[in-house]
Image (cartoon, rainbow, N blue to C red; front, side, top):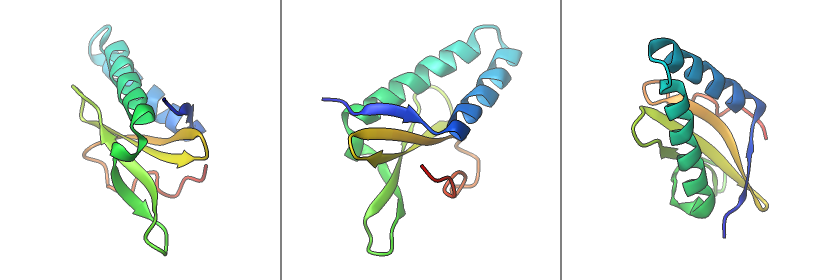
Length: 105
């Protein structure tokens, strides 16, 4: 069973910016990037506890996890909220690890 997937509005912007960059460098590469992100997100929705914990609350409980994207140097950060997987950020792996952690669902 998979969780329902939602994207934070700023994660949508992350995707658009990355898609634009890839598409400007090679026709169709942006679409391949989106397909890779889609596969990553659906894998996380199916196995939500499989991502590496990256943000914890004061009691040590995991708030946010991340999973790498196959074929592209990007990571998807997400939170499990009730029966939903909320994508909080889509970030290049060379960005600072705390990128997007201030975003609230």
